[in-house]
Amino acid sequence: ELAEVYAELGRAGEAEALYRQVLAAREATVGPEDLSVAGTCQLLAGVCTTLGKDAEVERLLLRSLRIREIRLGATHPNLIVSQRDLADLCSASGRFAEAEEYLGRAKFIAESIGKNSAELANVLEGFGNLRKQQGRYDQAEEMYQRSLAILEKGGKGEADIAHTLGGLSRLYLLTERHDAAAPVLQRRLRLLEAAHGKEALQLVDSIEDLAT
Image 1 (spheres, helix red, strand yellow):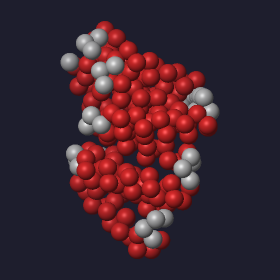
Image 2 (cartoon, rainbow, N blue to C red):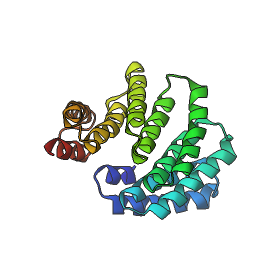
Image 3 (spheres, helix red, strand yellow):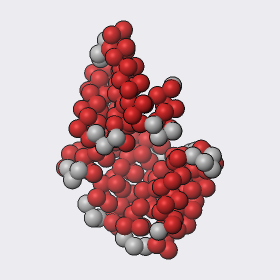
């Protein structure tokens, strides 16, 4: 829990050190392929992403995914988060075929849960990120809008909707559609304030984007 607090406060280096201690303790007590180890690897990967340690992020995410596949099977919903994060990593580094494969596997699982599931919304957002990286902007916008529609219909919380709005607003800024970006950024900022408070670090990106 303390590691999560450090991560929320932007103290990524301290969060990483604590997560590594937790990981070592769990490996020693429950074994290297326990599901709790997969969860810690996932959290540690998130912190390493903030620190720009991409090679370590990929190693941790692959380990988390492998453990979950062994323990839960290849089509369990808990695999989606690892597949989505790996897709984002591959997409950001131009490894589009790998990103497409991870997202395709995640989409198959998500659709089995439901056509209006939060899991499918998560995967569609990932496709939006991928299409944006590929320069396929119309398709990226469609994916973000579909994701947003599912989240809104399902009554999901502010943080979930704000996350998808972040991808959509960055797409609009990238394509110099500033008039479209402004209301999306304003809505995202309101949702983040409601979820985290007006002094939270999570607000910084939206404030900076609105100022551009």
